[in-house]
Amino acid sequence: MTLEIERKFLVTKIRKMTLPKGEAIEQGYLSDGEPTVRVRTRGKSGFITIKCAGKKTAKLGKAIVREEFEYEIPTAEAKALLKVAKWKLKKTRHYLANGVELDVFKGSHRGLIMAEYESEDGSAPKPIKGIEWREVTEDRRYSNSWIARHGVPPRGKRKKRK
Image 1 (cartoon, rainbow, N blue to C red):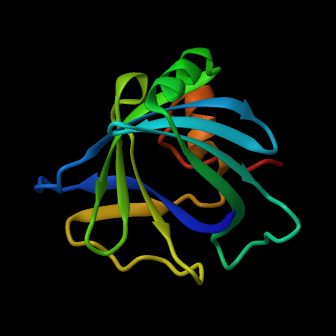
Image 2 (cartoon, rainbow, N blue to C red):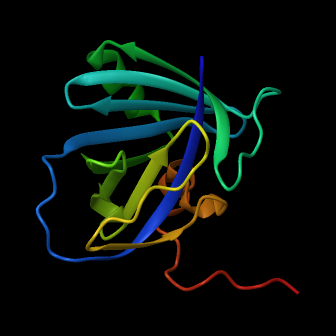
């Protein structure tokens, strides 16, 4: 078990640039509650991941801190689990030099680009020339499980509730 300390960003503008070679990811969710259970193929490998907000987790600044249990499983088993997953998504992940992971979504989620950044202290990543983003760490609609289940959130700002 590890602690995942992550911040998420919606990429709002990206100039034409050459990204590092990406890695194909297909993931599906076997549950979308607490805990979240995800199965994924990444390249030619398979993984199952359980994420939960346990007693040891808390917010660290804006970062979301969760317990994460991730195990490599045979790729054939990951593919079999993907077939029964309730909600799915596909994306290409690009690993940028400053530790930012840039996810370019495919299929019905095409057009969505998200950046994720993990750190030990919950800090934000340094800006990247040519990429503009808006932090969405605290907006559940930008979690991968929510996107897989409900689709890409509307681009406008969230309406204030009265």
